[in-house]
Length: 197
Image (cartoon, rainbow, N blue to C red; front, side, top):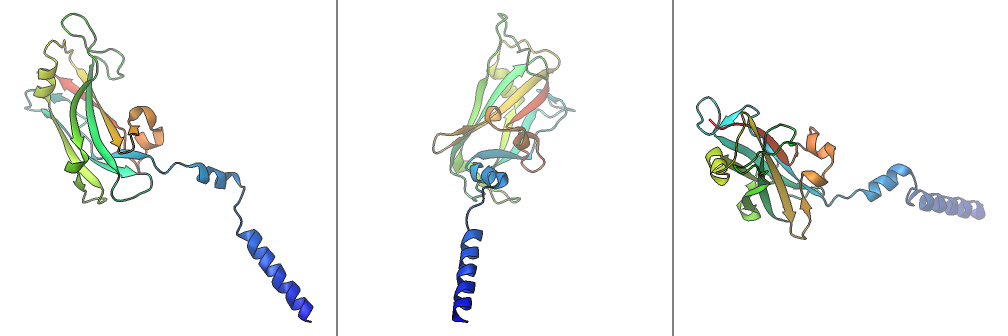
C-alpha cells in the first residue's frame, strides 16, 4: 500500500512539474517577444479639426492640444527627456506638395518648440505626465516670412518623444494601432487646415 501512495505522490509531482513548464504555443511565444518598453504620446485633447486663421475671428488662431506620455510597461513616471514639436506647411492635406518660399524652394520641417519633461504634470485622467501644447499661428507665419501660403494650407505638426536612453518615438516608428486605435489615441501628428487671413 505504501508503494501505491509513493507512486501516487510521485505522479502528482511529475504532473505538477510538467504543468509549470513554459508553453511552446505560438501565442505564448508572441507575448514573450512583445516589446513593452516602447513609449507614446497620447492626445488627451487634439487640436480643433476646423480651419485655423492668423486673425482669429470665426476660426481659432492658436493650435492647442493636451498630451500625456505613457510607457508600454504602464509605469506612472515614464523616463523621458523631452517632446519636440515640428511643423511643415503643405499645399495639400496628404503632405505631398510642400509649400514654397518666395524663390520657389520647398519649405522643410522646422522645430517649433522643445518641451522638457520637467514641465509635465500628472494628468487628471490617467495620472501620467501631461502638458498643453499651444502654437500661435502668428508665430508660424513669422517663422516662415517668405512662405507662399495657398488657401488653404495644411500645417503638419509632428511630435517626437525622446527617452533618457536615447530612443526616439515619432510617427515614423509607431504602428497604425497606436496612431489610430481608440485606446492609444497617439497619432504623433496633427494636420491643421490653415487660412492665412
